[in-house]
Length: 115
Image (cartoon, rainbow, N blue to C red):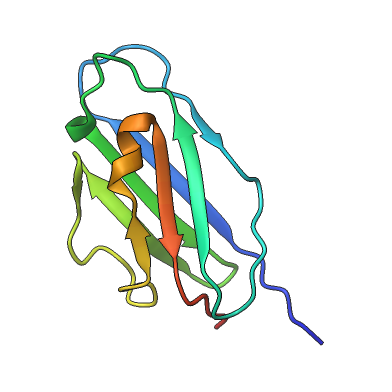
């Protein structure tokens, strides 16, 4: 019998500049299904405006289970925050910086585990 593990992922994005207006983030996929030891790519999109400075962008991505909270990724003012990632995800979450300018946030999570 295969056990299902339901987790929730929180993506928090802030823009620390004087840009006024609405900042909308869209979920490209509402749920993901994978087996242990597989890889998965999580992606969100947002609207880029000409006056938006990406170095003013802060992104926090966390995983919430019924038992614990984990930090998957943290970018502050355009720079990845060192050692902010939970030890369970260290070396297994990669941020795709190239697509940020296109208004996309993409995280690659490798070697999924159930614990």
